[in-house]
Structures are given as structure tokens and as C-alpha cells.
Figure 1: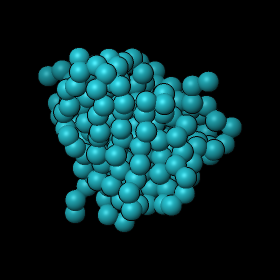
Figure 2: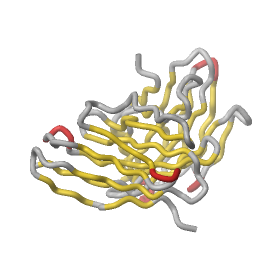
Figure 3: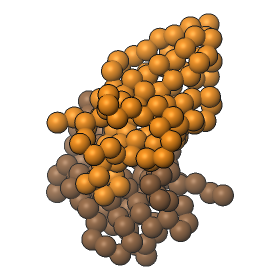
Length: 111
Length: 114
């Protein structure tokens, strides 16, 4: 069956522009997580969605970052006014039980 | 405080040699523990997990890990390294208060020499 998919796979943007990253989780998985992987910080949790509950946004690094999950399925991570330190690979995972299945990631480069 | 620590950012072994990647966690209550592998330019793939059942956990590709509560460790081993094992390996935990989110170690890059 289909795994977690993310788009785009690569995104290059100019500093100050807004970007949207998309995650399509595995069908039927109720929980969805976003993580960021960067050279200096390793793998960091960003945000968590579980069903219809309010998301856990405790990992978002600044108010320029936001995410939504429409209809309990697709999720979009938005970064406004991008900065060079936002350059990283953004990973999405959906969960069945306590096992997280990761997408291939979106590599974001801010120039 | 660091919840999970991987000792050694780089490990190099010869093909056929034992692979040992170290992971220690800090939690008063044993968490769920995972090892993930990441090949270049790919996402994370689950190797194995410990969820309070058997302390010796077998995973894919011949890897296994042993949960040792007394040592708060979850080291990853493979008896005989293969060239295809070259990748970055991440130990991760789900803490009891973590609501299912993974907290990752800093990763260990495994190099396998012919």
C-alpha cells in the first residue's frame, strides 16, 4: 500500500518568501507528526495532530511556523517570511499504534 | 536534559565485523525505544522497537537491540556488517509524558570498509 508522501521533494526559496509543505499520511492513520532535520539541531519535533483534538504545537520554533490538517488527513506546514536558518529537511510521519511511518521529506533551502 | 544520547557520531567497521551502536536514555519510567535508519537522501525507516515486551528485540536486516533497564541502554548490534549497512542510525524514545512524539538522539553515521 501507499506510504506517507510529501511534496515538494525539494524547495528553494528566497529569504522572506512564504512556503507551504504538504504531507499525505497513510490512509486511516489518525495521528500525524512534523519533524525538522537540520545539521545543527538534528531531528526535532515540530507539531502533532491527533484526530480532532487541538494540535500540540510545542515544538514550533517561532510564530512564523504554522500547520493545519484538513479533514483529518492531509497536512500543510507553512513557514512565513522564511529565514536562512529555516533551511532543513522537513519530515512528516503518520502513526499506527506507537509506530511512526515517515515520508521521504521535503528539503527546504532558503537563499 | 537530553532524553536520549548516542555515543559516537561516527562509527567505522570492516565488512564482516560486529556492529555496535550505543544508545542511552534518561527516564525514570522505561520509555518506548526505537532505532531508525536513514540512507542518503531518504526518509527514516524503522529498524526495530522496544515496547515493554521481550528485552531482546530483533529487527530488519539482521539488526537487534537489547533493552537493559539497569543500564538505561538500548544498544543496536549486528553480528556481521555488510556494505549496504552504511547509513545514519538514530535512536529515539517516546517518553511517558511525550504524547507519542519521538525524541531523537543525535545520530550515528556508520561507515563500512571493504
